[in-house]
Length: 346
Ligand code: 13P
Image (cartoon, rainbow, N blue to C red; front, side, top):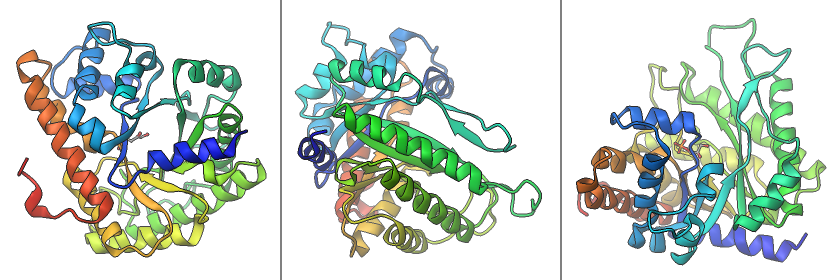
């Protein structure tokens, strides 16, 4: 393993003012996004949509340090035959690849999942490296049960351990292959739980994750963490202020994430666009932590562009403008210099 090379990639992924575009939706997930604009989920539409994003040169060059691709996408080419990998690299952005095979029910632990994809991963990583991937993503999914559910409450210690162990095994294989692992333990925000419970579970999960990474020999300088922000569940009647989200997220990161990690790139997790930007900005505005804090957003970077696009060629420029705008707003947030007045002003 060439740790210096891995560290260089990881540092570039968190270049100040830049972040990651998560464009690695599986066929099922991109299908849901397309349903919302009544666009059929075909290979051509998936290509057209992603080509539009990757050809937004001003956004890609200035604000997007890396792009997470899906297996189909890393092998795909633009309409003129340029491979997506070359298109991304031509904008000085790094191609990455989602390598997990999705979250499946965890045997013996009702209500919990385990992310699969370790079998054969060494071979798949070697192929992705030759295709141009220099970083990878693996997402573990942790669901918090209803606050009034005592029997069968989740997550359990076993569920957390299984998922963080798999993340560490994946990360070690990535580093062996010369690929920077993004480790993503996502605590879902769809539930009824309050922010205190999200804080507690995020702490348990990250604590377990860094123990497992250590035990599997993963060198943290060559990794990126992709966590959730500490928020209340969407169905919780009490929604916290942006200050509370920022303060609790910084606190839990300081309590669990070693300083040798170069950067932390958040998922947006279903927060609306501006809220995700506002929270990231607030954290960077507060400051006082050793890592770069940036974005690795899927929905919060793409949603406004998707609605502008509507699958129509005549909306291409408007969609690119929307993607540019969200990238720029999040770039400012990663520097702590965003403010609400900038929204709407292209
Ligand atoms: P969201 O920002 O839409 O949560 O997606 C990020 C991601 O890559 C989830 O794995």
